Image (cartoon, rainbow, N blue to C red):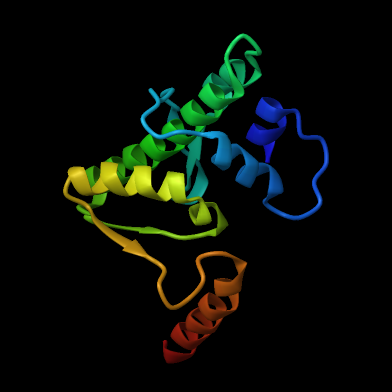
Length: 149
């Protein structure tokens, strides 16, 4: 939402995901990414610093298409960077892409290509929606796991 607001000037939307969908529709594959620094925060949660993208997203001297393309490339490369870090720390080789952001075909296709090129096994939602529709399923699985303990 923030990237679409900064890149396209979208101030209000009629439905959830409208801005990101417009940004995706404008973007093209193959852009050069901006490196996004990561740090580990409390409880092992990784945080991504988006500040390096802000100047680019606001650069009216670049086309909206170029800014949207670089944004998508940067996100996909960050997914790869996080996967590499987890593989290095924990020996993990499987990556699941889920959540509403992974309804974005350009992001999924780019991240999938990067991950598979580096030997990761990619897991994508097939029977359960990757967005909010899958939340209740996840909640049931979590509840069942806690009950089994």
